Length: 161
Image (cartoon, rainbow, N blue to C red; front, side, top):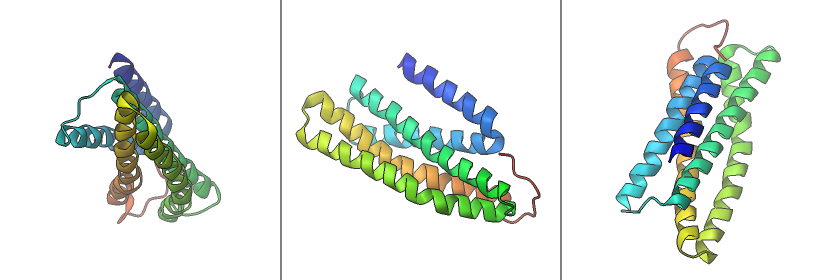
């Protein structure tokens, strides 16, 4: 549990410093992702074991990876001369295929682990499956909703990214 807390805090700090406002939005999505995973596990009345915590940690990594892909794509589009709103749109649009591919590949592995694993491996797989699905929602839909809420109807010259 300590490793999860320390790792999560370091990731939050890095995202906030490196990506500024966008990093804070990613941190909100990351926290929401963990809440969703724990809530679903609670609804399933699952016991959180060390493999389950490892699945949550891997989920955090996948979620951060998705946000980094999106934000770096947005930065790239800004460097190419796009307006902030179009850079956001293009960044999310172009990063989606890569994020879907990485999450789908991870999901296939988790399903195989669940199908052929025993005991703690199945617990890891269940947590990972829930986390991957939750991560797709929070990293793509959640952050995009907040970013569009902040920047959508305003004329901005520069993004805080």
